[in-house]
Length: 352
Image (cartoon, rainbow, N blue to C red; front, side):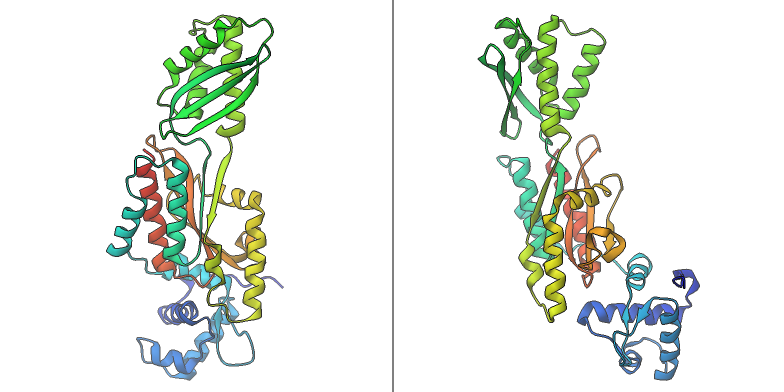
C-alpha cells in the first residue's frame, strides 16, 4: 500500500489551523494532544467532535498519528515538514541574541579563522541548546608569505604563513639536479603573485601563468612551484574542516529510555564524520537556511534528529562553509532558523 500524499494547498483553513496547533503543542511539550485540549487552544470555536473529524482526516493523509490508543495525536515527519515549510511563522533574531553573537564572535583581529569558526560553533550551541556544527574549507585564510626551505638535496620544506598569522608546512620532493638558487627563486615568484589570495585562488592563478608561459622561470623551478602548490592543495585546499561543539546539550531534558537510545545513536552518527561532511556539503551550494528532518537523510534515519544549516561566503561571494545546529526534531524552529541565518552571515563578514 502506497503512502498517502498531500500538500498544504489541499488542506482547508480549519485543517491547517488544527495541524499547526498539534505541531506547536508537540514542540512545546513533546506530548500527544487531544481534541478537548485543542478545542480550548484554537482561535476558532469548534466542538471536540468536529476537531476529531478533522484529526481523522489529517491522520488518513499521513500528517499526524496516534502513538498509542489514547485520543491524543502527534505530528508525523511529513506533518512536521509541512509545518516547517508552510505554516511556521519565523521572526527575526532578538536584539539580545544579536548583541551576544556580535560581542562574542565579534571583530578580533588576533583570532585565526579556526578560532572564529570554533567560537561560532560553541556560541550557537549555547544559544540553541543543541550541538553546533561548522564545516569550512580548510584553507580559508589568505596567504601572507610562502618559503621553500632546503632539507637535503632531494627534499624541501614548504612554509605557508596566513594573514591570520597561522603557519602550516609540508615536505615536498625536489626534482633531480635542482640548484639551491631555484628554491629562493620559487619563493620570490610565489610571494609576488599569490599574496592576499587563498590557496585555491593561488593555485588557479599560477596554473594560468604556467600554462600561458608567462612565468619567467626555468623548467626545474616551475616543477618546484607546481610540486609545492600540488602538495598544499592536495593536503588542505580540497579538504573540509569539521567542528562540532555542545554535544552535551543533547543530553538535557531526556524523559525516557527511547530518548537516551536516540541520543546514543546520534552520537554514533556524529562520530561518523564522513557522512556528516557529505550532508553538510549538500548545503554549500544553496542560498539561505536549509532544514533536514529525521529520516529525510540517511545519517539521521535512526536517531530522528533535525539539522538546520546556512552557508557563509567570502569576499567574492563564494560559499566557503556552512554553519548550523543538530538537535531533536522537537526544536524551536521559529527561534533557531533566524539565529543560524544571522550567525552564518556574521561569520561571513568576519572572514572578509
